[in-house]
Image 1 (tube, rainbow, N blue to C red):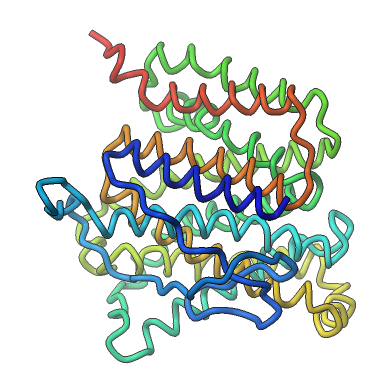
Image 2 (tube, rainbow, N blue to C red):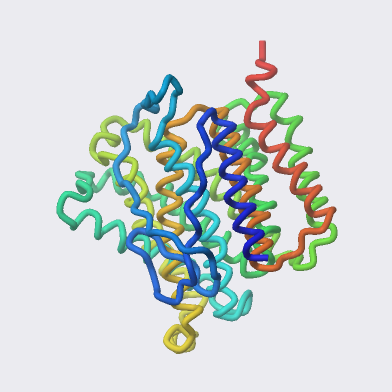
Length: 384
């Protein structure tokens, strides 16, 4: 099963890259068992044995301009973009595995989902601060107190989306949670239309029943179905949709982009503020059980290794995905996000032994297909 999942992952990334007009290359063999701990910029999930590989370092600074095309033998190849896609997909894949293993080790839905989600953000913050302190790694931002205050809504939504997602994955299967999270455009459309007063085309509205119908089909025979998982994933979608709109407003603030300095700094600030805002919630919800969590953390390698790993993978794949999307156009972004969902849902389900019956796969295909159609429908049928 593990060999099959690795093959599916490699093949899917290769096909996706080819779809972007980039020559696919064999993906480096996946890392071996992570009993050793964490890597420099990323960490591997403990308890999953894979092929032998090399550690990957995250490039922290990216130009805000378009992709620079590298010419080789008359064929346009954007090598950095190819690397970003590989790291983004691999990071998201491993995050979902290590996150689920950490949640299982801590007791699942009755364990410590809020504590784990908060500490995952804390691990990412330590990495971000390290990059600011390390010589020649990343220049720290020169933001003002007013800039930080204006960043708080984005940070709150970032923390809310992450914590709700982790709770959803603790209550149900990763594949089911990912299918529900794929319906985020439905939440974004409602918010854009009725809260932010940004018109959504009729064509996009017609796509939403397809997305919602796919999620319903995928839920019919879900073995790990739980209302808490469904509701948590929907809350995560709501936070993510608000975050997208608030982030756009933030970046339109005069001078803030120059003071932040880079995409990496923007995500680092959001992560640090999001972590600080999550601490009171995890203390209120699970703080009384903190000694129990500490004891588990000390005695269960599957918990501490996967918690640290998932924190690094989460921070890394989110930052590199921002870099990737910055270098691509709208259609490429839609293809990339659609392919990522398929890779994660199928790959993680195979590795963790989650159910993938026909109805679930059909609902997954319809839902994700609807999301892709939603993303490009205005280009196919532009409003007159």
